[in-house]
Image (cartoon, rainbow, N blue to C red; front, side, top):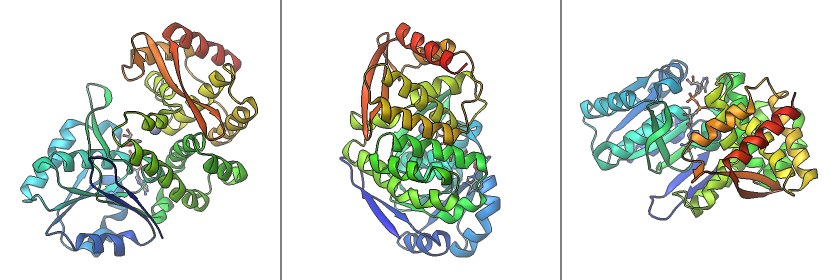
Length: 352
Ligand SMILES: NC(=O)c1ccc[n+]([C@@H]2O[C@H](COP(=O)([O-])OP(=O)(O)OC[C@H]3O[C@@H](n4cnc5c(N)ncnc54)[C@H](O)[C@@H]3O)[C@@H](O)[C@H]2O)c1
Ligand SMILES: [Zn+2]
């Protein structure tokens, strides 16, 4: 068992526990301190783990949403809030989110809003949710086609990460989580070494489970230093500016696969600006192993145009990128939008 805590400025303390038997032991024990709990999940996860959860927790009210990003909406949020109200949930009660990042983001936001904030426990069931979304207190729903447009910072009281959930995880979701782990590897020398030394085991679930504590520790430390993303936390955006552009344009792959593609492109941008060429080539080779090759992509110039429309990336007409630079080092790079377009086009041609 490994335990971490995140105590960030202006936020409540969050404890993160990596261990087995979460549904039967850790979760019931944590809930004993509450008058009432309320469980939130998606229909797919609930089909797999609902019976086990009910056996351990007894008669707890439950609300489920339809699985998938398409349902990460204000309507889903409102229907959860209404179910919580009907169950008579009070301040001092606790919302448990059992599922991937979508359930965690919607449930976390409901916990932030309900009676101006109640406690929340995250039980992340995907690799991505364990190494990334359940840690750090960012919650949100999508609105008007914009991802995470409406949200809040609300640290969960507990996060329980159990590797047993990976047994039922589809291969596509494993690769998706691997994308965020490789991103952490581009920021942390220790995670990079672990990945490089085990590149023949990148899809082995027990190897990935062994990496979860180091990934949580890494993200928890970044969040502890900068919970509200005023500085350091921006490093977690590595690979994501280019990833989001291709994701919005194309959408055929998973988010984690676009993060891998974005990391490959941004490593190439770093090479042209004096980053450590040997390390960046090793990072790109690791990315290719994780991706199984670069898939067919839409025109890179078009992706650059999309990136320039995303207000999060742009200050005036410039694009701000977090790029890998050397082992364990990143740089913030500001590029004129036209130059970013030319760079993506140049790199796109390398792949033809
Ligand atoms: N809050 C943050 O800091 C943060 C960070 C990164 C990503 N996110 C968000 O996380 C979301 C993506 O999360 P995700 O990749 O976990 O997606 P997800 O929650 O949609 O889960 C992916 C699929 O796997 C299924 N699933 C979940 N656990 C399973 C299991 N153990 N066995 C079998 N199937 C299972 C789900 O039902 C779903 O169909 C996005 O909305 C993204 O914006 C948030
Ligand atoms: Zn991501």
